[in-house]
Image (cartoon, rainbow, N blue to C red; front, side):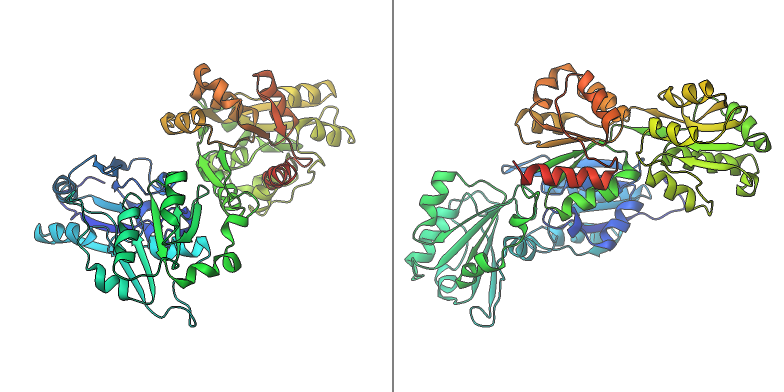
Length: 511
């Protein structure tokens, strides 16, 4: 997309929301999908990167623990220079960029440089975190005003430049952003200017994420509580009578998998439904794709089969990928689904069957259990001696299915439709979380995901991996994991992703 001579670049300022990826707006997601360059901050959920094009340039420009990886002036220059190359540049900022996010300064610099820009507001941490903590910021009987105050000081001075007397006199809700380290100062100033020590207060850390933790007390007790538990950023402080409504309204922290971090190893386009369901259950999905599917090295076996489909009596699909690549190749050799007339279609698993039905093709057999052995049993009920089957599948796969069908007298043509490779997935963040013991479950949906996950993480991380619960979609995947030295504790009775997530929920409810 870098055609700077005939394309004018632009800067899109996007609010990423306070943490939960579901709080990114639809507009924000659409811009991420079109981005050539993304500059993102420390508090942006890194999972949002999965919405981007593979070719997008991702640049971290955040500030952690008060230390900036890049000065503001450098960020401004980068936005301008990348846009001048004709690129769509996304500036992705936590919360809403116009609420203590310096978004205004960045857009001023972009405007001065004559660059076109778009502004996409985000769910601010003020409203998002309070809602997930179960604290309404306004309430007809308790608070009719809301004051939003920054608790940090860019100039590194000891005090925060606030008119404490006026703030302390306000009767509504006070919200302090980025004030975890200044909490003793905030409390002291408010009480010294007349705020009652009995005023309710809540401090919410990592709000809207599975790591969310809330401390409640009063102005008179919160400093002692925070010193004991060492409350660290990112944290939001809410002061006012509305805090007393938390026990009635809190919901997020009661979700069945709240506080659990679950590693999703499925490839990107197949992970969405799994990630969405985990978020509904209150878990933090940690997206770590370990499989990428690409075209096989040689199309000729499949092409030959597709050009002679009339010689087959049966067509077997073992995965959604097999269906997808088969149909794409059918088009590539100038054929279409009419060529499948008269073929009996067999699939393993409901998702594979759905993918076939979506093409308008009837599925003749879906076995009761979603493994090769169950399909062999189903096909075995028919007289298949001398009948010819086409099996489009991954280049490397279990040989159980073709071998057993051949023993039963069938002719089976195995045609590589795709191959799986190790993606270039960065391991550093996962390694840190594993070593810190903050990964609760690792999910595997095929034997390939087990092997690739272990290949990417390496021997060194194996002891840390063994501390997490291992959840496998079925017995074949579980055996692969066990053979690799992992202790598999969660296997559903039905071998599907929804059943796997149900099994994880049941496991934690009973432990």
